[in-house]
Structures are given as structure tokens and as C-alpha cells.
Length: 337
Image (cartoon, rainbow, N blue to C red; front, side, top):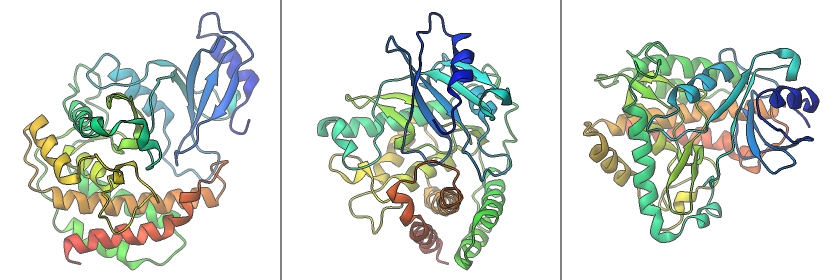
């Protein structure tokens, strides 16, 4: 299978899992747009998940498997639901790239209106509460006891993010989009004061969580860009991905939350305030910031697919160039640019 060397991976995993029953079956789990994720199944039906970087067109510093493994290991036993870690491999002789393996967690990924059907209508508002509760748990993690206090600088998070994502955008794009720099300049001139620095996921959204039919969060996934910074920026990221039925456009082409029964963005903000007691009066800024940031991310995702970094190209990627413009305009409208 592309991206996997089955024999060396089997040997590596058999040294870490007792009574592994060969041969192993590998299946690419589709839907993600960054690291490659595979379901691994042995002949007894036991399952694991293997994560590795994209195959090509990887930016320096991105797709850090060691960092993601560290996050999952550090959060084991905390209030944040994460999969149990089996191990990390940094030996390039195995598959030619770093990878890690976790236990498989049952749950649904709610990525579109069709997948929303896995959670009954009467449990969807509860799901919104649980999702915000998981985000609040991340922002409440004790950095000292988890060994994460040295993960990153905590101060000036938004300013650093603005510099980073503008640089990433310019490194990946082949288009002239002046609105990206215009919104960047407007954002950097009105950054609210950062009141605290906490652990933040960096890409917290509904489809980066595994959800049970009861509307519970079984696991929070995809920790590759987690860091320390302003927790309100993390909430802004959730809002930027969270679509409502009345929205003018859907950045990813479809969204589970346009189906009936899900709370709106205003309700999510109110829920976060109840969970944390934090002042959310600056959320308009953070919504604009996260929308601009998502525009930069989607430009890079599209470029990676065009460059052949992922073996399968989802249909929604075709709309990403237009979504980039739509997100940048949304941010510009909020900021009055």
C-alpha cells in the first residue's frame, strides 16, 4: 500500500503488541487533508491506527509525528479523551518517515450532512455541549504535571500565528491574492491583549473528534499543530469550521452542522463561557483571525494535493481555491477592511 511498507511495519508492531496475529491488513482512512492515517487490523480483528506525514510537498516544521506522539502520551489519563499510544517509530528504515501507532477508538467522524445522521436529532445539542466541554478540558490541562510547560512560547500567540501562516501561504501559493495580506495587516493592528497562555489544540473542530451515537466525545484527534497560546484563538478555530444553515458558503463543501438540531456559533460561545468563565467579548476578532488562518491552511492543502502529497484527492478539495477567497472576504467583512 502506498505510504506503508507492510513487512517492516508488521515486524515493528509485533515487537510492541502481544500475540499479534499476522498478516496485518492496512486501509487508508480517507477524509483528512494532512497526515496520512491508516487502520491496521490483525487476523483476530484487533485494530490500531497508524499516522505518518504526507508523501511529498511537506513544509519544514510541519507534520511532526514526534510532537503529536508526545501530546497523546502526555494527555493519557487526563480529562481530555485521547487514544492510547502503542509506540513511536523514528527509524527511516521502516517506512522512510516517522510514524506512530495508537489503539483504535470506535466513534463517528461527522464531516458532512450525511454523517450527521449517526447522531440522533435529540442528542445534537448535547453533542455541542460535550464538544465545548472537551475544548475547555484542553484549556484546563495542568502544564507542569503533564510535562508540557516547555512545549512552546506562550506569549504573543496570535501575532506569531499571523507571521507563520502568512509565510506558509506565500510558500505554497501560486496565485496573487492581495486580500490575504490586507486582512493579515488589519488583524495584526487590532490583536486583543492575551490574558493567559494554555495548552491549545490548534485545529479543534467537530471532524477532528470521534463521536458516539449518544453525542459524547470519544476521542480528540490530530494534535500535530498543538501548542501553547491564547485559548480564545482555539475557540475561534472551532467557530471558523462550524457552519450554520444560513451561512453564505461552506468552506469545506459540506458540513454536518448545517443539518437540524445542532447549536449555532453563538450558542457555542455561550457554552464555552459557562464551562470556563472566560471573557468572550473579543470573539468577533478571533472568528476573523481563524477564518483568515483557515484560508491560508486550505491554500496549502490544495497545493499539497496538486503536488501529489496524498494518494487520494477528495472531491471537496476542488473548491478550496474559492473557499480561500470566501474565508478571506468573511474575515475582511468582520474587520471592515
